Length: 428
Ligand code: SAH
Ligand code: SF4
View: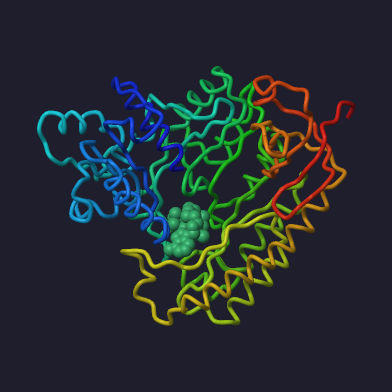
């Protein structure tokens, strides 16, 4: 999501007459796009700002964008007085105007309101990848997960009109894009604000039906709003990729209630059942938080048994991190850093064993890959399967510019915990 925000910022500024340069050293204006989902990401921002100032940032205009900007607001000027612009994601359409204010004498400018509901409808986006595009369909979040800072940094939920989503998706295909990833903090609660009132399953299906669209992905799904109609839409549209990311966070219904996730373990598993009994085989991935306040050893065990039960194809696991403004800050029974680390390692080791098995099951199958680039050291092409696995393959003769962006059949010959290796097949 942040990567796509940066693409919107670059596009907006280029349209205002700015030019992008190769290195921060060559720039007169440097904008940092930031993440505050966990404390570590936030600390990184302040370290970078410090280093940049020390290493020749003097004389440049420096701005901070994104969630740290939104969260810290004007306080950021105190922590880093050499910063002169602070703006959250809902203000990017105003950046040009804010920069004019700086050029005409203002010392500091901020953009921190959530008034501009149409912020994602940026007419200018400078996409980095010529084949695979991000497309925002919904901004913000109306859930209130007890650990999460997002509702404070990205504001309330705002769905974009289906008409503008479709127009952008069609425009992308016309420009040569064949893969689109629909984005939102909770895409499942998408609701077209125009009278047509499309829900997420409808917009997903319509985007996938655009002639020339080869692959459609989406992130992220909140299990509470993951309805059966989404699986039906996926089953019916081969262009929708074989992958569902369904963040569970914990396997314990008690912890899920404390987190305010609005589903129990059983309700989550019912959704997994829909997915597993679907017509196609879907790759399943998730997010796990270990060490949420009050998570007992027994609760943690339930997360481990959930991993055994679901057999995810991959997951992201995080140590609970305290975030400003969140409800969990007031909860007792903090888990020590060492214990969180211990639990994290156990989750990662268990998942590694599951992934080795899951990936090995793919040996011998033929997968269609979207070629993303060349791994020079390994002398292999890098491809991505519909189920979102990296599948590298050898085929030395080809020219890079002819290969990248194409779709090719590849037979899986080897499997590791995190990726697959294969060879291009010519007769399927
Ligand atoms: N909207 C998405 C989540 C976005 S944040 C959703 O609901 O699934 C991505 C992931 O970061 C979350 O799924 C969660 O696992 C993790 N995360 C969010 N806040 C966190 C915190 N305070 N500490 C640790 N992990 C956190
Ligand atoms: Fe955060 Fe929960 Fe919203 Fe996801 S659904 S962004 S975890 S508050």
